[in-house]
Image 1 (cartoon, rainbow, N blue to C red):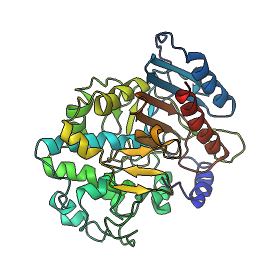
Image 2 (image 1 turned 90 degrees about the vertical axis):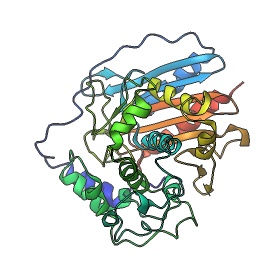
Image 3 (image 1 turned 30 degrees about the vertical axis):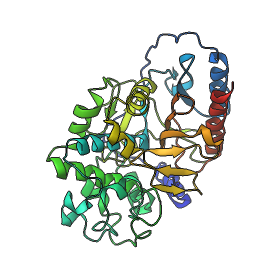
Image 4 (image 1 turned 90 degrees about the horizontal axis):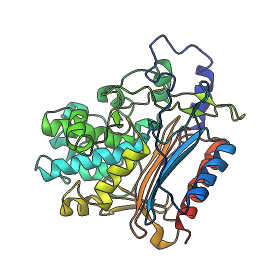
Amino acid sequence: MKTIQASFILLLSFVLLLPLGCKQDEIQPTQSCSTSSPAPHPKAASYQKVLNDYVRKGLPGISLLIRDEEGTWYGAAGMADIDKGIAMQPCQVSKVASVTKIFIGALIMKLVEEGKMELDAPLSKYVAAKHLDNVANAKEVTLRQLLNHTSGIPDVIEQNSFYLAVLNNPGRFWTPEDLLKYVKGLDPVFEPGTQLEYSNTNLLYAAMAIEGATGQDHAKLLREKILDPLDLEDTYYHWHEGLPNFVAQGYFDLYNNNTLVNIANLNTGSGNGYGGIYSTVFDLQRFIEALLRDKTLLQAKTLQEMTRMSAEDLLELEAYGVTIRKDFLDRPVNQYALGHRGRDLGYTADLFYFPNQDITMAYLINYGTDAESDLKAVFLDFRKAIVDEMMKE
């Protein structure tokens, strides 16, 4: 995934010196939560050591769950709220960022099963022309090309003009129409179907397509068809749903001086398909295992279509099906995983299932790795270290 431009970070550092307005913050000071201890696991000490090591290296807080043949282990380290001294716990809700996309993808596949959407139908079948006008490739792409990132539509998240608007009104609830104006008039990235490049605008349009196909709010359908049937009681789709008082704060080392700045309430378009879900490692496990391990969420033929990898980008070491990312392609060939990454300004998440090892991994970190900082390198080391530990015999 592309990272935020350096010019935006300079802009952010300047604007955060100024008052950010009087709108009440959505994420209030974090309250503690309690979790029972996990069952004994032979790697409990080594997993906890990895968490402790990387908190000592600067990551503010981490919650982690790993399920393997020995059982399910979960733990946490660091702080959910530095100012209030609230420790991170596995029950803490945190922003999953782009992991939201795989939830939206699963919802679309449900609608495909019901005959309400077709993957190879043009986007124009579901979204009115007025929303496609002057957006490169929007009138030519199919729903599948949106969902596997082969659309060539420019990414709203890459536009500094959008981030300036976010900083001027950090708590704003963005509508699709608000967001699309930042990609109007831009050149296409490539011709549809010819290359792979990740674009958040793809999932913005996908959410609009859901509503055009069904005549219903996509957030309502997400709750009815995915979240509630799986009993994901600690999962929330912001801004459509309120957040509890035990959401972890989100941080970024804005000045690269080992000082973490709380940017939890900068809203970069939550609730528009490409981001907005807040969850726990427990709910994330339940979702990914219902989808990919137990295979109870979708019909077999639908899941096969969702996981068919039709696009690859070897530079980024990733491949995509329908919102499903094939990841860890830099590891031995049998150690790949299916799922999604989440990267935002103040939060990071990974949710993956390793089919060859039958391992589920979910973690939430309240530090942003969508922009460059020294701690991004620390996070990337953590990402490798925890999978290395998982794969040890």
